[in-house]
Length: 367
Image 1 (cartoon, rainbow, N blue to C red):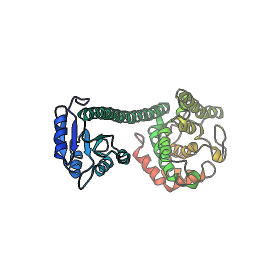
Image 2 (image 1 turned 30 degrees about the vertical axis):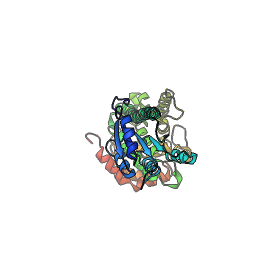
Image 3 (image 1 turned 45 degrees about the horizontal axis):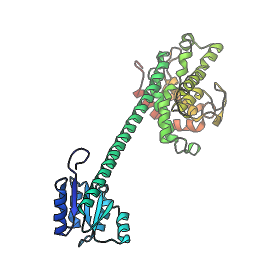
Image 4 (image 1 turned 45 degrees about the vertical axis):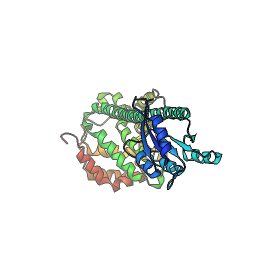
């Protein structure tokens, strides 16, 4: 009888008795490939070789290394642990059988062996092994497929974030690489604060990565602001500024609408929603849209506030010239404790040079 792929299964006979080897070999050779070992150490070498057997018939009573020890070593080795072992023994004591099963043997055949019993047991255990191998291969395939699909979903999420962020960018041509710079800013500032006592446990590696991916959506609500206001070269009138401030609410509502399409109580868009809604709040409560203050401002919004302001300051707009890096740093330092969370502002000041490097490497065309 062959295995599932029609290749003859290989049986390893381990026995120090020539009579037993002759008997079993003559019984099996017409249906299986037969290998022989007359000692335990030789059996281990064959089993661990390039073509391990599909099943082992293992005598218990052998000199130097008995069958129990051979079985124990087989089951400890990941390469041979799945090979079925059937003990061949003249022992019939229940304690001997219990010991064999505890070591991982699949079955016992009493000596002298009955040919029909030997053949039936071998067929049974080869079939069981074939099923186990199939399931193992299937599980390995499924695990690989899950990893692939998870990676694919992650890439789709990333592309969605950037694409939607770029959509807002097209409404405001001066922003250029703004979304790419700000997502790098927020990542490094969050990483610097992950061990800070105030933020302990909240800025995990996965959260920081999601902050990085969510940052492009911070101004997604600008798609709902009229060009006459969004691109106005002069200072906005008070009523126009009120309309402009609504981009935070429009962004939040757009993300909420997207979240409702997802069958998940906490979607990957949750941080993006908080960023879009709260990155214009101020530490002293004078920001918008809700006038939140202090720790009532969601942490993602507080983290996004400095990257957004810094990049706006150093970028040229239709209504202003670009500030120097040094001037932008000074403005943010002066806003610590009023506009910005003081600890986040402190982290920014400690790594302001890294912000400058990012701005230089991702500068706008013509900037």
